[in-house]
Image (cartoon, rainbow, N blue to C red):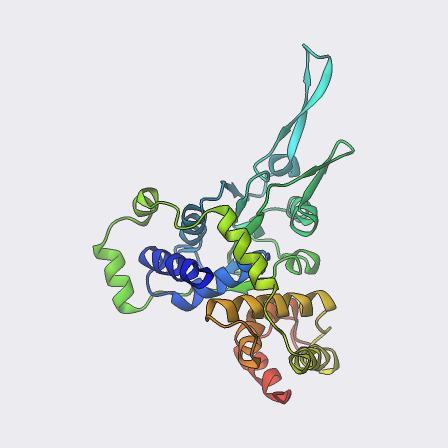
Length: 305
């Protein structure tokens, strides 16, 4: 039943996001692992469309927050206003109180505003006026980010990047997929016409099932070896944290479940690793995030179990 729901979801999403089957599986892996997703790419490649499509197909309450340089933390979390009738302050929840949040162009806001999402993403709660308010379940943040060389961007600090389980890039579509996009219906209109494929309760069941997948001791040894390799390599400023290791295992479990298996293979870890590790590491040489070559070299340096 779980695999059937996954296939239905991927097929429906593939009708909207053309030619990006691998990226859709990565995004779904992140969601099933209860993580948050960062999508970095140039404008117009389908980042926002992917977020809308997932929210619609999963039947999730959706809010889009457009990050700009003048956005304030209260615009995200909410604000307290004075109620004359009760002679007391009343909290008005902000757009963060939704099941799926699209933080659009997150690196166009100031670091102070970016930090308003830290507690929400880590603790799944918000503290306002001394009160802790739980966020709805499931709670999932998809943030889009423009390349750092574009004008008007602020780099995300390491603490913010670490809150994202995975980072992916959609890239330009293939020639055939692009032609279908040019000839076909507008994607926004298409999303408005589709119905939910599974319910939020079904999604919760899938997330729970993903946590139950079998991980052998030797595979945990392999993950630890990968973590140690990042810490011992002179190529990186700092290595991966234990939290990154736990996220890597959670994402590998979800990837294996999408493939229809009840156990995790080393190949699952390898497929997920660049997207879990890439945005958490920085090269010693120039401080930039590692590319495919550096991450492939790291994977090849650690023997398979």
